Each structure stands twice: as C-alpha cells, then as structure tokens.
Amino acid sequence: MAPSLSTTSYALLSLLVIDGGTDEGLTGYELKQRADRTLRFYWVSPAMSHIYTELDRLSSHAFVRADEDTTGKRTTKHFAITPAGREALQSWLHTSEHEFPVLKHPIALRLMLGSMMGADEVRAMLDSYEEALVARRRELEAVREMLGDRDAVAYPARVADWGLAFFDSEASTIDRIRDSL
Amino acid sequence: MAPSLSTTSYALLSLLVIDGGTDEGLTGYELKQRADRTLRFYWVSPAMSHIYTELDRLSSHAFVRADEDTTGKRTTKHFAITPAGREALQSWLHTSEHEFPVLKHPIALRLMLGSMMGADEVRAMLDSYEEALVARRRELEAVREMLGDRDAVAYPARVADWGLAFFDSEASTIDRIRDSL
DNA sequence: TGTAGCATGTAAGCCGTTACATGATTGA
DNA sequence: TCAATCATGTAACGGCTTACATGCTACA
Image (cartoon, rainbow over all chains, first blue to last red):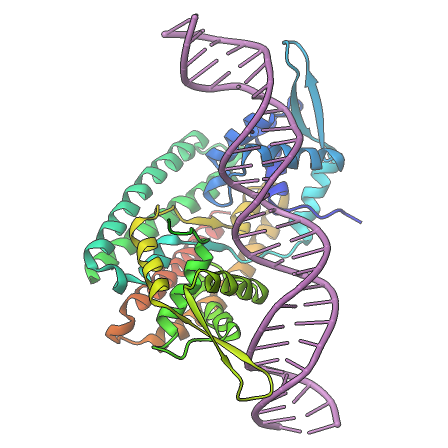
C-alpha cells in the first residue's frame, strides 16, 4: 500500500521535480527558497524545520535520495527525487481526492464586524491590505517574468497567471467595497 | 495583559456577536451550523469537538457566558458573548496585525505538474473543480439572499459578495486555462 | 574582523482533525 | 419504532510553528 503523505510533502516533491534538475537535487535551504518564491502563492511555505522533517520522511520512503556533499568542512545534503518518488507523485495526481481550495482571509473576517470598527477604520484596513496586495503582486510578477513562455514551464506559468488573476480580483473587490462604504 | 486567542476563537466570538442575539446565545451545535454556512467561505469551519474546546477556553476567559438549559432531560448550554468578550473582540479588531490571506489551492498545486498529468486529465480536473465551484457558489448565493439589503447586516453582505467575486474569478480563470491547453 | 547569508537540525507546544462514546428529541 | 437530527464531550494524534542550538562561508 502506498504510504499517504501530507499535501505539503507532495508539494515539496513537486518542487524537486520542477527545480531539482536531473541529478543534482536541492538542499533543504534551497527548497525553502523555492517554496518562498512560488509555493507560497497557492499553498504554504513551510518553516525550515518542517522542510527538514518532511525531507527525512520522504527519505525514509525512498522518495528522495540524499547525497552528502563533503567537499567543504561541513557536509551539506542535496535531495533529489527518485523513480519511486515520481511514481508516488503520479499516483497522488491521479487517484487522490481533489479537495476544494481553502481561503483563510483575515481581512474578510474582520470586515464581517465592520459595524464594530467604524467606516474610517474599515477604510484604513482596506488601504493597508491593498498595499500589501500590490507588493505581493509585484513579487509574483517577477516570478512570472522569469518563467517567460518556455514550453517546459508552461504549467507553472499558468499557475502564476492564476495567482495574478486572484490578486487582481482581490484589488477590484477592495475598490468596490470602499465605494460602498 | 489581554490573553491572546487564536483567530478561530475570535471568529467564533464574532459569530456570537452577529447571530447570538442579545441574550439567548447559541449552543455549540448551532455555532457549528453558522460556521458551516458562512465562516467556511473565508476562514474555516472548525470541527464540532474543536468548537467545544474553544468555547471552554472563551468561557475560562469570561469572554462568553454559559447558560445551562435544564428544561429537558439533558442540559444544553447556550453561550452568549459577555461585555469582556466584546472588549476583547474590539481590541483584536483594532490592535492586531492584519495578516495576509492564505490560499491553499490543491488544484493550482496539481496544475503545476500538468506536464505529468497530460492535457486530458488536466481538463478533467478543471471540469470537476468547476462543478464543485458552481455548487459552492450556489450555497453562498443562498446565504447572500438571506442577508438581503438590511442595514444591520450590510457588512456580512459585503463579505458574502467578496466570496461570490472570488468564485467568479476562479471560474473565469478556469475557462482561460482550459482555452490555453 | 565582523556580519549577512548558507546550512542543518531538535524540542516544545499550539491548532485542529478523526475516532470514539453517549444520549435526547422529533417526526415519519 | 426506527432513523435522523440535536447535542456534548474525551482521547489520540498529525501538521506545522516558534524558539533554540550550532557552525561554515563569502565578502565588505
């Protein structure tokens, strides 16, 4: 029976497929950087310590191979996905339930209590959210630009576009709500 | 010092403000129903057992008052927010960090690996997501209709509209991606 | 020479879920 | 009378974070 991993585990495995190269693999540290750049926009970016934990688990299932690099004084580990890992990912893609997205939206949550905040404070909250949104959008735009229109990354590019569309939708919702106050 | 609660705790407190009436309050079971109807669209709907746990915690801080109803054979507890609870909620609204929304999007996550799935399977995945989306939208529409345009629930109505806009944005993104395959 | 970034881990603890256990009430 | 719904909880455990601990490497 296929051991069932958390979605985050599969997400990390996905990063190893996409960014891990053919053989070299990535260190836990590098994996964290990739997660911060991309995964965070439509999943989460796990804490460093969590990444190492998941890497251990993936390793114990032989879904990744850990190559120790001892050229320097300190040994660093590079993790690469194994054939078994690819298989596990495949079967996850094919057979698992496709859960509905979960949106945890603290701004919307607070907006629900707008009558306890007052219009001014609501406006201030929306303003600061819009600012944060613009900043995030810029980061994702940079990622999108790096992807370009290469065939090899057509799917990641679509995901990035999805994220950009989400941000745009948020921005226009903010505008509409502000007008309604 | 104000004890810091989890966001979910504040969310439940919010439901007690909005749906809890002046004095009667809600049972844990009723709270779960409200959460399933509204909270779930922009936060989460906690498990029953978790709601009881949070209610105990809120009770221990005197943010809610538990009134035992012993008219039947079994005592049921109705929870109502206290003045101290309102204050805690206020200070949470005013002083806390306004965190950025988190979107956990398993469909987008899988789409990233579209090249491992093949166009047909990607299409099937998008189709089934669209179906689920339509169903969710209908549920939220029903909530929105119940709110109507009463002043008292103008803010919850805005939040519901926000959710509907999100669903619409998702639907049009799906269309765009399908066309690009 | 010092500091920012690279790199790896352990421990404690919170948040939240599922599984389990129990029983009352309502209506077909 | 049987099933669905109302109603309340405990126990075990998974996932993930923060805090802590350690040390190398490059470069200004």
